[in-house]
Image (cartoon, rainbow, N blue to C red; front, side):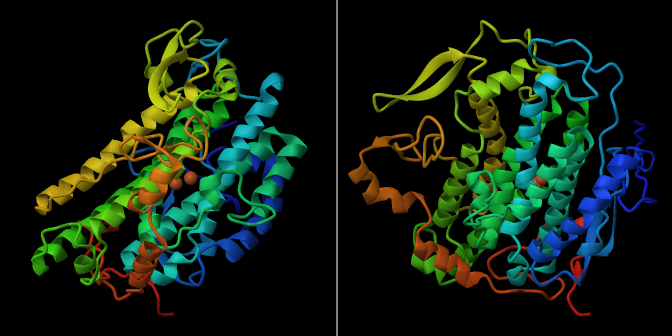
Length: 482
Ligand SMILES: [Fe+2]
Ligand SMILES: [Fe+2]
């Protein structure tokens, strides 16, 4: 299979993998394409399918200058199949066969587990598009609207990426799984998406920014561990997806930062020093910092659930088989087999939170989650720097990993964001301080009014520091008229 740096746009499906010479897969993808377009039209951004949007499209997988920008109608976006170039002499990075050449075909004994991993990853991609489909209508600026649509079309491309792997390497079951990916729907009663966080609503723009900060970052960690796969086509697919996801997290982290900045500035103008003067601050038409903290608590905890149980035989099996590595496996210096190693896992024992030595192989989910938490700190630091610069006495913090969990070690426990274990009664008395209430949601919803004049921003959010593709402030990122 010839991979090139540049993308071939001569086929209906742009690609850098010589698809025009692979008739079987090209045909299978062409058959899947109309169903995808139907899905995009039905479940993609509501009300903007005919508008011209200033989007980036990948034209190369070379990390310098891989994208070009231009106006596109979203249904005409060139969703393509792009794999990072093959690395000469790459070896299986972990597990029982560590050090042997990577597989270019699916090894029979790992077929089921690989298919499952690809389907789960694939299922998250269209889910977020579905969750965010109503947000265009309340976009706080054309800049933000464009960023939303950019994230959406790229999640659509990520679906293509997983469907390519299914169609190319998994024959008939791959085709069936590809169809199912279009059939499940976020939040649907009978056929929901596979993972909890992808069935939650994204009701407002603050939720969108939190989702792209925390849930896209979970996506990054999952892709990082699949990028370490001994199944080389999966590794190369995920490596390129990571380039795109970096922008999604940028949209999230800077989005929240701009909300914070505007709140602090409005407080200063009104002479409000107390960040807990919720009524006073809300009267200014901006989102108070305690509500931002609650949204952060919610989205962080939902995203932690995506890592699965702390201790997991599935994770151990995938690692042993060499099909899923640790975060930056190829840069870790150990034997990459972990047979006798241990890892400290936070556990709840007799209502006390303790760090316990567990077999490192069983604790791989816990380890990936710990790496994720460290990575999340970057976003938090950015936000707190802004608050400090604006001179407000408040700090956003990540809640304890045991807070508000639906999966794993802490299910059913009442743990505060500070890590204190409470009784149910105590919890009921304080939970509204930690998680957004209906009233908080209603208030945020009340601010969600469209602001679509070029260069203008809704009152509750600051303009960005720089435009997309270095465009000036007045740039019309989405052509709303005509
Ligand atoms: Fe994605
Ligand atoms: Fe993403």
